[in-house]
Length: 360
Picture (tube, one colour):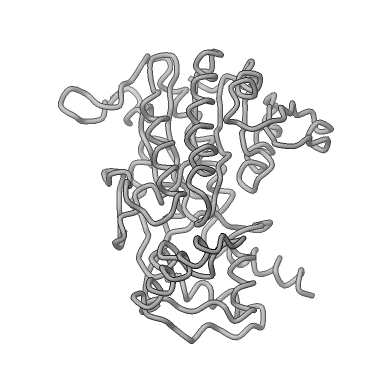
């Protein structure tokens, strides 16, 4: 069953990198869109978007936002590797639980949650990892911990008439990226970026076009199962339900890694960007053990002195920069019919052209 092309959609985080691309695709399809923002967004209103102003942890904001929405895309989150746990918990856990409650009470049919691969952080290499990994309960950063709790709440909320799923896009990038690539370049140009570990770790990334498409694929996949009825997350023997008439398994109550399916050597990719822009490549390195020790010291200093901003190194950053993080995309391809459209080569070339133009 196709998604009703006239059905209304709520997008939280609709002013961010991923959220704004998702909003644009929905508007192109002629869908009525509501966005939640902490501040007025007259430029969105001018495009015909309904804007609800306020924080998502407030029930009244969520109740107003979900009015008429058939699908809720919950993209908003507090991101970062450093900060007060209470702030992350409020914005990631409480906000998600509040929105889930409002969406179900308001009659929404589908809930697509933007999670992160960091929810399965375990301090080890993640090579060809799949969704069988448990959610983290022990991580030196509040972001993965609270996102894991939020994802668990989303999956637990799945029920007949209110189908939920969670997507885990990894390192979203592309032209217009205001976060990942600019931060890498700024640190490199300031001489504050070093290769951590042996420099051989492979990582998965996902182009913004592919990450956006995955969310639309997830909405459609949930709609495909509406005519079958409620699909529980597991059968009695602990296996996913299989519906032979669709040739795939229900995405309801499940989580999925979303990547370009082209793991790259992290440091080679970064050096490709740098050298293409006429910048010197990274050659200096630091061991993971040393980086972790420096991260622990920096965390203590920042916490004790209550310094603003993020420490230059943390234990979580050290692990992320030195270890493998690439994932098995089998489940997303099968259940969501997800196929990356923009390749790493194509996306990198487009990004380099944009960066060159900005530098000129």
